[in-house]
Image 1 (cartoon, rainbow, N blue to C red):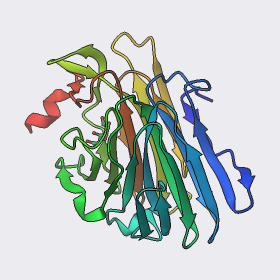
Image 2: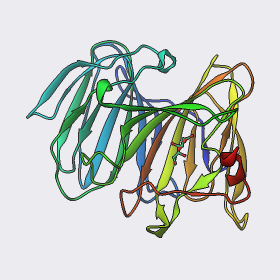
Image 3: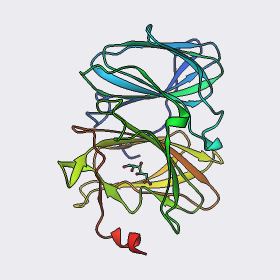
Amino acid sequence: MSQLLRKPNRSELSPGVTIVHEVTTENSPLKYIGFKVVDLASGARYSEELSKIECCIVVLTGRINFTDKEVAFENIGTRDSVFEQIPTDSVYVSNNRYFEVEAVSQARVVLCYSPSEKQLPTRLIKATDNMIENRGKFNNKRLVHNILPDSDPSANRLLVVEVYTNSGNWSSYPPHKHDRDNLPEESFLEETYYHEMNPRQGFVFQRVYTDDRALDETMTVENSDVVLVPAGYHPVGVPDGYTSYYLNVMAGPTRIWKFHNDPDHEWILKR
Ligand SMILES: O=C[C@H](O)[C@@H](O)[C@H](O)CC(=O)O
């Protein structure tokens, strides 16, 4: 199995708190992104003391209360399934802060981390703050909820977005990459994909490859899998009959999303 594909690996942290995924700079090829998927039973609490890392808490499903001991956000979250295809609430927490979440209902939260040394205010990123985009045409259409885009100065490094791709369509396509620190041409951003499928037995194909094919992995990705993108192009194809969801985290030396399309496939944009 590809080293870039991570299957769910559930481990109970404490009663009612289950870690489903934990990607760190120690157990992955990533240097700018950490990532946790946490399942919380109703009433369960999860807390963390951040060192020199910032965190975006995405309330993937269910509802939670949040506090960093200075501000509190109650009953946040908007959906019981990501396939309601409505934006959700998130919270940005800066480095060197403590935070605690308490599940108001059964919930799944995604904790997205990146190195940070300049403390910024804790911020509720409301669902209504998400900029929504309908991207693409023909069989390249997808719906994008921008949670923490590079136009939002709330974070030092993190970029967070969620993408829906309907039956028989492609996304992250034409293939693009952002693996060179070469602005204004291209920025260097590592990336993670957290995937869900509807119906849940579905799968998508994701390829991660570089121009020289030194890296060229094509993966069958299933519900709740994570794909790591340290470099390279990273298109996703969705079989007929299924809807794909993925949450992207991106981070790198500069918080700008400037990608470069694979020249072999850029022609499709001119149709
Ligand atoms: O680089 C960003 C990620 O590949 C996705 O968020 C991609 O941009 C989604 C899309 O445009 O299809």
